[in-house]
Length: 396
Image (cartoon, rainbow, N blue to C red; front, side, top):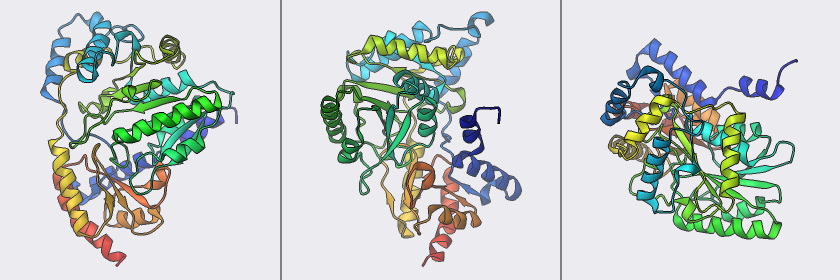
């Protein structure tokens, strides 16, 4: 074949999440929306705040060439300063500086840029992910020329298994990726977990003569239910933060986010240049200009988590009454449910026959669980309970 075989393999192996979502859309068209219970896609069901609409309307008053023109590759200075100032208000005066921010087309672009900035193709670099993990991590890591190393989370708590990470770190380890609040489990990593992880990475890095970076992927930071989400750069100095407004402001299709190299990073200037170079190499000329302006106006607008909290309570309560086991989520909008047989894919096939559509854990790097997204209408959750009950009875 005269084309890129790696790209062919990615394109041929479809995303399980999006395949299930596409199936759900077809079934809703055939049966009606109230008869199909699609829990597959992490698409926010809460509308964007009114402030977003107002910011769009203000931006539309700008001259067209200014509104729709290129911005600097790293983003509009006003947008970068607004974000940095917000981070300083929330996390302290040393949290962020504008020149350490690079605005991106969402968290996927942030991660792609970060991995490309950190990893050297052909050098045998490795990046550790904590399983279960978002499936696209593997694609983005391998596309940067590195090897994705899966390390299972603690099987009881789904916090980071520090001993397992320590055993996986080698002289080739460039980074460890964490995601808290976590997709798919909803777990928020505690400060103690992060402090232990930081100590582990310092110790292993010193012993092996390597500088391990910590990539903190944080699109769900604002979607929490009372748990503290520590500011990771305060805990570990070699942290790069990747962020998106897809979940916090319900803007997944607008693709706006950022990479931050914090001021305390020991190789800050070098890494900032690498991030800019990676953005250039990947063809990310600039993040969407309109939504850079929107974010500058809306950077401190709070997330509306009330609907997700109500959905979380309804789903968890309903499944608990039916005898299902699951991880109590402290953040994000997913319930990590133990499948009623070891084969999660088989379990999902039985669920599909009842028009219930979770995602099998095989997609996330482990077996025996399913992800149930509760970023759906409340009626979907309530209406699905008879089908969940019928599914449980199949295994009784």
